[in-house]
Image (tube, rainbow, N blue to C red; front, top):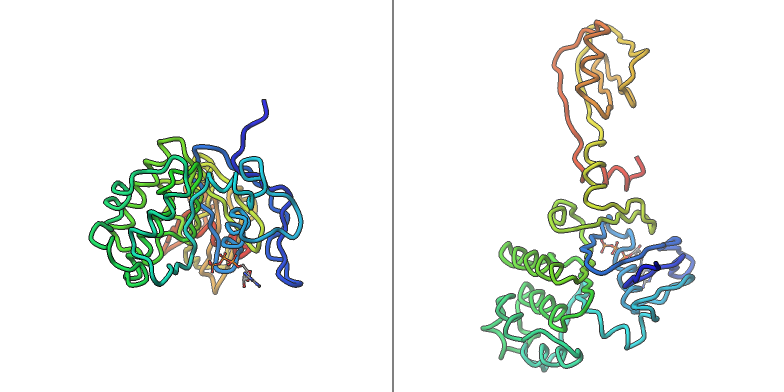
Length: 296
Ligand SMILES: Nc1ncnc2c1ncn2[C@@H]1O[C@H](COP(=O)(O)OP(=O)(O)OP(=O)(O)O)[C@@H](O)[C@H]1O
């Protein structure tokens, strides 16, 4: 049976002038996913989201949002979003902006629910342009969810949020996922979304270099490398070792890169290699991804 995808990217590229920003991106997004798009500054995260939202047109390839072009109002009725940079119209009060956005959706959430959730109750009569930076971000988040859309896009949603607001946002995302909805968000920090994401995409120079489920991520975490460092009294040879990926030798201080530090220590002992000042450092998932992004 053909799967019913919310969003499909087929062979998408995006150039700005002569510069190629996104390279042949293929991606399918389903209902009931929390997807984190990670990547360093300039990797192409915002460009990708903008194409999903129909705000940027791909140079080549085809995007389908609910089976239609993302610029089609019939598909846009199912989406909510916050931009990375938020500016609200000068004259409108917070409540007026919420009412305005809410009115665009056929089956929105109650205003009071979102207002209370994001701590905006006391600011409804204030001009939105006068809100503090963090309050503006809270308002933008409330607006992304107020329409009760099928998918919410959040571009770096935690930027400028205090600890409490971050906690609220994660709760809102969890509740939303439990309703069968999809959230697509960008971030620089894996640790931030490890707990809530069901899928992680890692974008490097416009290419998806990892597309992993949580289980896949865990496997990746288990296969990440460790650095085993020690001093060796003499020049050491590691010929015949099964467990070493690479060796760094700095004046007889050796760093061995391995996926299995226990087995490596066993091999050191078995081969009578003298070692002192032993240090073992396991690479965490975040640095594994960062190494990927550096092409290491
Ligand atoms: N309108 C534009 N014209 C020309 N170049 C652009 C335009 N928009 C983005 N770029 C370039 O495309 C590249 C990707 O930008 P993008 O904003 O998608 O990255 P990002 O991964 O979201 O980065 P960040 O983490 O810094 O927000 C950058 O090199 C940027 O300078």
